[in-house]
Length: 412
Ligand code: UTP
Image (cartoon, rainbow, N blue to C red; front, top):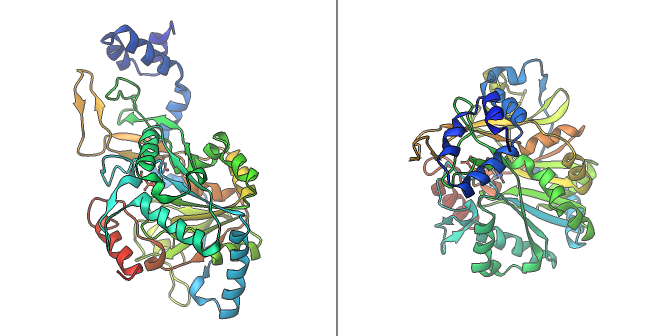
């Protein structure tokens, strides 16, 4: 790359020249190669997202309530009928599960992939990946199948994730039915829009959000593999929910009866201002609105029975037909900007490990895929049966709260 100086100057990234100057020939070549592959126009567009006024995100968009079904208000006959419809799909080998494990888990601060975090549950401590493996194996036994299990990693944690499974003998899961695939990265930007340098003197990158799962599944051959196996319905869930139910036949049965291609499990918000995204219609299409974007008045609005009109939280329990995944895989989802902590090498060569957020990370969100459909099936479950998130080191949604939910759920 001959004119890298010009390019860097053009895009206000000339601070990188100082790093380049201090590198040996080999490292210099490596960094220049990375710079050559950067789409600087895209970087500029991404930075604009960080500086955009949050309130403007929903300006001019019509937000409306979206209907849902309460699993525990179904009559017995419907409950049984839907169970049968869903169970038939699972028993006939048309069902697969996917775990999103490409996140950085910055809030938890665990050293390693989040799935390798050990939760001190009863009767013995278990890794998050182990809990998921046990859950799927329980379903395999129940339905006499072996569900194909796809695990999305990121370049940052892919090797560690795979070796962790190997070291733990795949937790007894038939190895040939676990498939790992990797999502992509985007550069992080400093507060003033500068590219950052990591410990190895490479451009500081991070996984590009759980919404990139759709295109990664296509690119990495996951969709093709599913089709080869005759999979028709796919559950996609997060790695950090200790009581994640990946096989709810009611969710499947209801989606099929409602003739929808996408579905999601929800739990009702703990209070109107809980920091979760909720389901709604945006311009008449299924969507999730983030708590930061939901105006207070809508957050508190109730129906005639006193139920919150925007009370169904998106808990990352999503179901798709294979057709739906193929449709979304070809779309460009919007990017969102998050302000996170990121270590980096400063201009004097010091490794900086910040205590407070210092970098913009750009992510696609899984729920932005809902927008391409007219309808979605939403099934309200129960928090104590469906949702034990591990997000923070302590306090709300921490290992402590998840351990309690796990032990209570399994009556331990
Ligand atoms: P979160 O958005 O809560 O992010 O992920 P996180 O990485 O776990 O934690 P923080 O925000 O850095 O503290 C929800 C789910 O989406 C996955 C995560 O692994 C988790 O299962 N995810 C997130 C990805 O697979 N890739 C990503 O780029 C981001």
